Length: 393
Image (tube, rainbow, N blue to C red; front, side):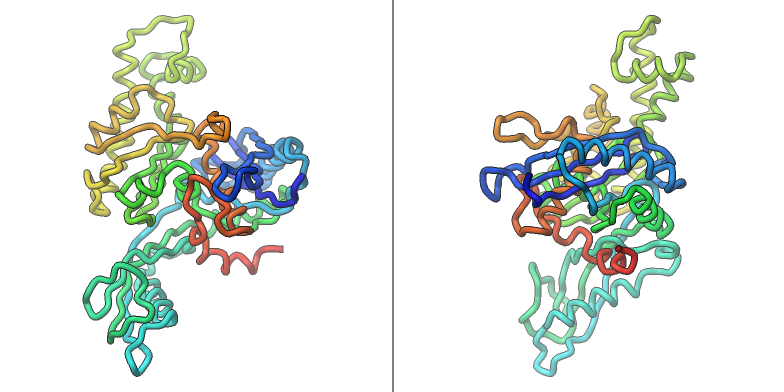
């Protein structure tokens, strides 16, 4: 087996998923070849937040063992996803005077402008948090918008609008502790919604404006893109388990039966379909109203031409897209999986997109242009990488 492989670890509230990939056999633009996958029931995780690294490590170790056995390789390093409550983002502006006497803008000026934006973040917004992702959204030179990098242009003042993704410091430390306990070094950490978006959103969707909504067991994550760049990331403390709980209470049935009813399974007890639909629709509306409130907060309510793409283990509800369209006033559809050379989906289902995206990112780091059907995520963790080097073996 080729030594050129990469491993992605997605630590979710319900399942730990591991994907190991290698380059495809049909050239640089071919789909990546999945060498092995592994999954285990999560432990020590609540709403995507690790509260017991030792318990979580046991689950990660089990998933890694399955994936490694299938891939016939030994995984010593991995790309790990940052998800769960506490993952968030903000966009701020920074400005600097051009340093050169002739007014030519250099890379140093851009760096200083980004640092000025970072320094402008209110202490309360960054307390107990670390910046895990940085992207420049817009440039202005002497008050006028510039469509691309201004390096080489001339002016007196440079302004930048910067997207910063942030996560709780404690969670990042627990992720590192979990990986170490599981016997795997952390090569890099990437925000899970961005990893999933690299797989499930096209270049066209990201350019026009789109939102990826990942409905998990205990959380719902939102990633918004415009002009090809992330403009917002947010995780809400609700998930498909809340729908199950509502069904159990509303119909007075055990949780196991409520879960089956939610997924359309035939159970031994007959219930009015209308009542079941009303319970599910009510909870879904609550979820999408949280999303809508955030879209209003960032000024994108009803203003994403490519609409909302729905994914995650909790997205297997037939009415989900209809409720999303009605609540968010945007086009909505379910995520489409990457197809392999034979036309069949590479992934088991869209809930594996985070782990696949993480592994694909790792492979792209080793060889430029190594990802297919997804855009390179080379900038996805650049601000975090330097900070984590002090912790890595």
